[in-house]
Image (cartoon, rainbow, N blue to C red; front, side, top):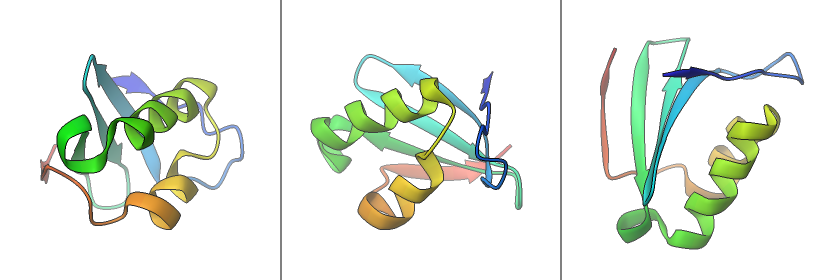
Length: 77
């Protein structure tokens, strides 16, 4: 897991893992993770989420506004 920089200072995102066709996002508040894949979430959304994750800003807002329930899997870490 790579640490999310949280440059805005108010994100619930703790970290992420990037794979060629997916991103796994880890949330600090309930220690959950969600997988977003090209097949389930859409390649355009996954690509944007990867950009935001690496930039350290805007990922949580993007998820809430665009892909909230479009995850392929979830669990606890």
